[in-house]
Picture: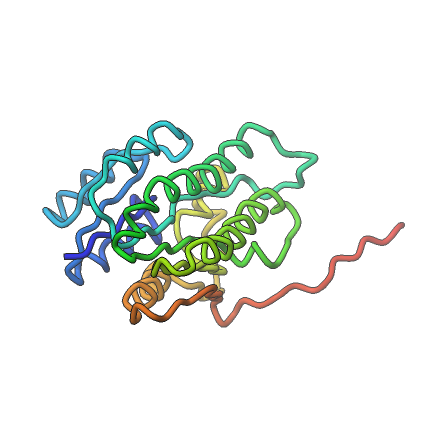
Length: 244
């Protein structure tokens, strides 16, 4: 039985990945900050699922958890979040630091801690980036910056791991309707609903299906970068400020 470590499994893409991999006979070790949700997921999925309560901002805990795990065939670095989409000059620094610690520092720390076992198993690393890594938007510089790091980190890691048999992929979704936007809007469900209304966005299951496909490809194939958008989403035009 293969084992996947998935971060951020208490909602959205991480939860959908957990269900899919368990349903296909994998053992999943899932981390998350919300212990009550981890317990519910463990009660539902049973023995194939091992919950670990973990805040990715706590680097000592990340190292401790990573060092204590058994052999792992797949690491899915899913945990992450975005601060409110406001211009940097209007933003508070503390939430930005927390996002960087989660989206970048925690991801790098856990990956480095697990790499010896992933190399031993000729496993795979799948990192959740975003289309924001490529396409900027007003108020998104901090989040986009973290996801651009994840994209470039993934490509650089591929170089470092050449010859080890370990595969590395950066997944870069556009609009996916999850709790992501609720969190970004300070818990405002109505604002999240309005954002997705009429857009027919992707779902967490859509992304989980893509991750499953990548994880189960033949060992000699590597998907470097996979960008996904719903059909109704494309790119904005250039923004031009004009003097009055």
